[in-house]
Length: 96
Image (tube, rainbow, N blue to C red; front, side):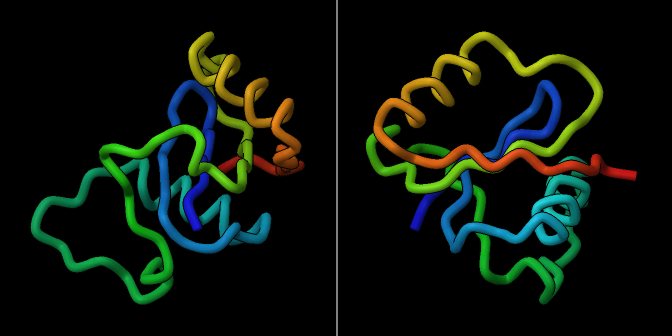
């Protein structure tokens, strides 16, 4: 499975299962900080950032509140996903 994790004005295309709200918040925190040379935590072994992916392959979307507005391009993509019947899940809590 492939989906999009949106965090404020940032987003990540991830391969893996749709995360729960707690997992999405932790993943947004984890993937937002670049850690050069550090191994991936076992907590995130189910997800991998995809550099290239067809939008038609996106099967899930989760939005985590963050600093900044969602970019117009990502808003458009979320609209396309909603029109395809993909449920856009919004987390109630942001990254602390």
